[in-house]
Image (cartoon, rainbow, N blue to C red; front, side, top):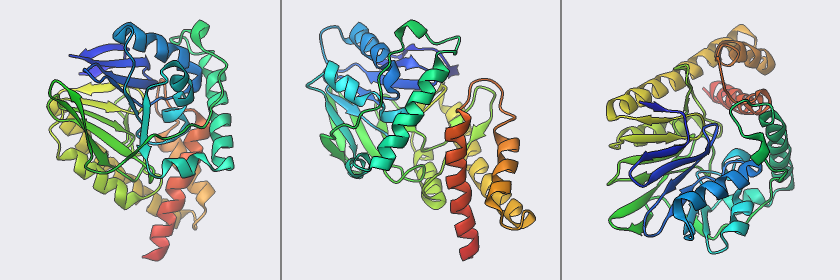
Length: 305
């Protein structure tokens, strides 16, 4: 089953915000949220958190990685919930100290805000003019770490690099819930699976295989939808691995055909794997930034073999 609307997913677990920029909340004795997405939706996130929790505050915000569309509202949320701790990779503080990285996050966030003002299923009256702001990391995540939320619910931390070097996924074993960010790619509503390695193809495949070994009933990806059902999730992981390998093989083929021109390879891949996707999808500029990273990385691998 595919879920593309906000609200309760299963017992104590909620999708907040907007499916394109989702936040996930688990309501336990120590309630927690996963990813802070975009700053311009900060008001929406805060309102929905308070609807579920009432006067209680989230104890921890877990970040899968510090891309602008996964950590964007962190500073806004810290203002609303001062006692909340921010948990992210040990690499996150260094990324957030880079002026060029922060400038890019600010620009992409603002461009997405303007784009969402014309989105028919986004409440424009609740979009705020809030820029991306750097923030402090309170808890540095370690692979294999666990957080006890009470009443038998535990969050397990899984290092899943490949999309980025700082990427982590979060697994709730009793509930069989996996919050994977972009460690496994993205399933579009059209059925298309997109591979999302940016920093390392080999690490990404290894992370995918690690996630595949888990028993998962609820799979939460970084954008677009939630997948429910163990067999459906197993099938998605199988397809995600196949698409990752197929993507590499296609890029290698195009590098030969286009005499190593990265620009021409990127345009071919965009025409085949982006322009053909109907409905809601990643905006073109961030897509092309990510595509350049993928193609450049694979070109380096090919040159070394």
